[in-house]
Amino acid sequence: MVKTIGNKIVHAINSITVVTPHALMASAILNCRKATFSFDHLMSSIDTYLKYLSHRDAMLTDTLTKDPVSALKQVVSIYSQRNLIEPASKQTDENVNFTEILFETNINKRPVLEYYKNNCISFFIPAAYTALEILKKGSSQFSVSDLYSGYGFLQEFLKKEFVKNIDKVPEVHVKSNIKAFVDDGILTPHQTLSDTYTIIADGQDKLKLFSSFLKPYLESSWIILNFITHNPKKTLTDKDSLKKIVSWG
Image (cartoon, rainbow, N blue to C red; front, side, top):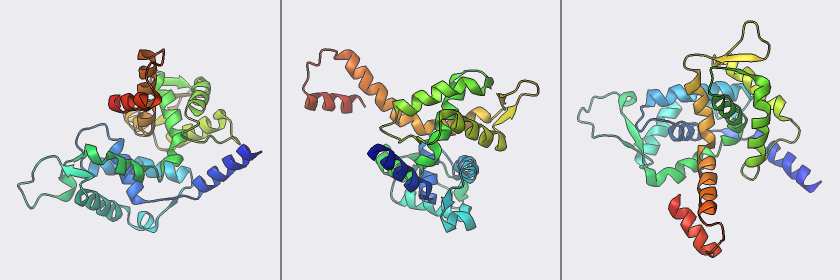
């Protein structure tokens, strides 16, 4: 009973969390697969995220609702001033357009960006699970029923990180996310086969924008499993084990 009440409270809190421009921009930066990025590139990713948030009926700050471009430009300026991101090279032309400046992430400040990203991550986890399962198939065409078991596994595997919604089975989440992906033009239904979909030309890149939310958590799990494999007899103390794990990380 206590676990059930706790689960419902957590999901109630998540459902009324207000998504901020700081959270969206941090998500786009950290999930970017390129070493350098421009404002326009990040806005392309954020456009995908905003469409999914609309599908989830997520609440946005007034600044994101009224003038998202200006709000997000201001966030990039703030992140740059705080050295969370840095120009990839010195700008010699003072008249260069702000949207054309290439930035890179300050590795030492990534935890701060992760902090901001976590403000909105709960909205994207169902999409991340679904996107990862689609990408794992390694094919442009897939059947929805093939995603259910993998989605359930990820829910269970990461249940200490993200509290799963006990009111909905994996099938419900998967079908909801598939609809969101179809609405955004990431997937298209097969013309003759029921519950079968095809990834469109640039759909794979958009799916990776969602699956990348899981990358830090899967990498952390891989580091720990790798450590256990190399130290099966537990010859180190807990303190030394943690030091070794952090060092590998």
